[in-house]
Length: 207
Image (tube, rainbow, N blue to C red):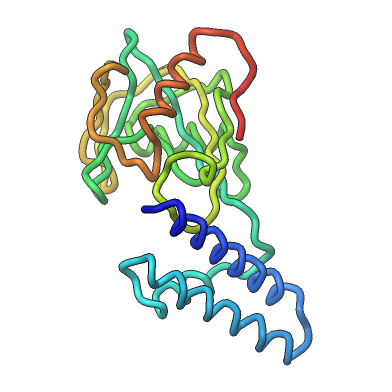
């Protein structure tokens, strides 16, 4: 996707957020109608950059009712004999780090423990925050909603491989021989930076 189209999608996301915030706090019928119309316009514009219809996108937008903030995606970075733990998603047939969105009433480290266990069968212990990145500032394909990505260095403490409804395969790979990646979840550039960070004591990567 061109940089121009990506810029358009950022503007659409901002219009949606403004509409969502207005609907969350407005108690005036006329303002509510206007904010609702802004949401419809955002969905209509978004449909020109998506395989989904304006109605489908508007439905997704409508599911968000409170003040618009970025969601938190957590990922575990696990090395075993210098090989990296990856999972193959059934949804797109591509590979990524174990993880997903944090749930309500979970800390980030609790979320990454749960997600890794659910996706791999391994019980892990996170011991270092490697990076906290804004997804929009990296080379991911454009995607709504706005997401912050939190990467933990973890070690396996128990368990064994266990596939599930979401994960087709679980395996370890050399950082120099990575399989095709699910780039809206993680990119090769990010994995290389995280791998380098594991072997030094510098500060957490951010933004």
